[in-house]
Image (cartoon, rainbow, N blue to C red; front, side):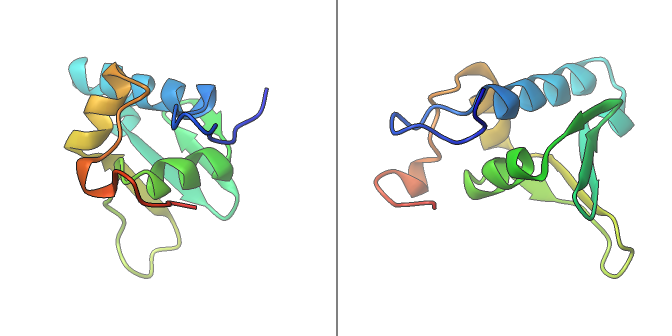
Length: 103
């Protein structure tokens, strides 16, 4: 299965799955699992390993908030409000980006 966005702007299966994991962790108040942590090419959402391509897709779609500390070597991302909306609807597009290329 490809991790690339399709022309209909639907999130890839992997990207939507990661959003769903993050929302579920937030709802269960397991905050360490409600973030994505990346070091180099290895990215994790709780115990779930995901690809850098999926994380980049979520960043390009403006669905994450960078919560990392400068100079620590580990990138950390949490959901923003648009990310929560996209978890509920994989066709969701950030209104400010509608009609713009995010490639």
